[in-house]
Image 1 (spheres, one colour):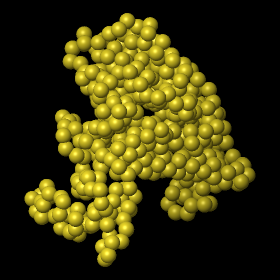
Image 2 (cartoon, chains in turn blue, green):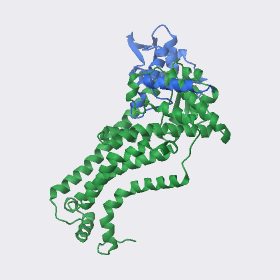
Image 3 (cartoon, helix red, strand yellow):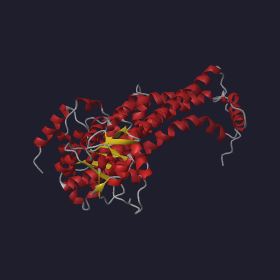
Image 4 (cartoon, chains in turn orange, blue):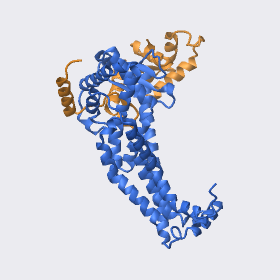
Length: 123
Length: 336
């Protein structure tokens, strides 16, 4: 099982693993030295990725001397919970952005389904 | 004038009552995709009748509005069609017709574009975060399969413009709740949604309801179409995962159980009553618990023909005077 995607995920892994805010240089050094293409990762590539993460509000940054240091704005679990809540609460209404396997039930529908289940022999 | 009145009457009839028998039709569950086609045809029929009716009213005015080859052609044709088109009528009626056609068309287009933008934003929001926290699972299919490490059961798909970007998301909670065969059925169900582009069909009726919510047909359609698409995806899932016909009853039962398990494990929310396809789980489970029923050839042929008539009808009514005139050899239109 491997992580979905790419450098963004790898960078977030480093930030989630660290207790201290990290600079771009520190993240670059913590990453595996070569990318999937076998070449060395450039400082500017990692910097761009971290800048993107900042603009998506996934990381917060503050000045430390002449450079920025970054930390994750939410834990991994909080991110996961947010994806789930977004999908469960209003994902389906947004111009059919996503389609659920089952729709959310009202309490009455849930009761009806349980009654239906109770009336059937176990399969 | 007659053309316009006829088209407006068609639109009023279809928009107000045509959806009622279709919403109640038992055959819809036997042939869900054909039923969706019929809903879409009716919706298209209402819109095209209004737009064409407006244009027919405006036609005699158009040559004064547009100059060029088309207007010459129309002007000569209009002279020939004196009974229908050159009947005296105030110019403001023509202007009103043109405005109506334009307004209806623009409103629908804007609604569709807004829905598409909204969907894109919603998917972006999901995919941005899934990239960080989702685990990519190995899959034999084109669609990406992503595991979300959350105890709450959930499974859904995110359509992508290109098929390689289409993504199915399943939570750890859902995997723990279902048997392996049920997970296969669930994934096949989601793949059916993605491959048959069900999100576009849903979006169309949803956009019509947003733009013209006072039309009863559109409201009925946006309630029925999502449910019918779930049924279509259920059928496809059973078909794709069972090789032998005799295994289908078991597969249907297992899929029904999967729906029940996932639906009852999720926390019920009063807000669900307002979602587009509220109540679809119950109908699906009841349907999957019965032996599969198919629509006979005669019914299928009849209904398919009905779809064709409804789609082509308004255009035929609108062009009837022109076609008659052309056939009478008065109009300078060459019917090759």
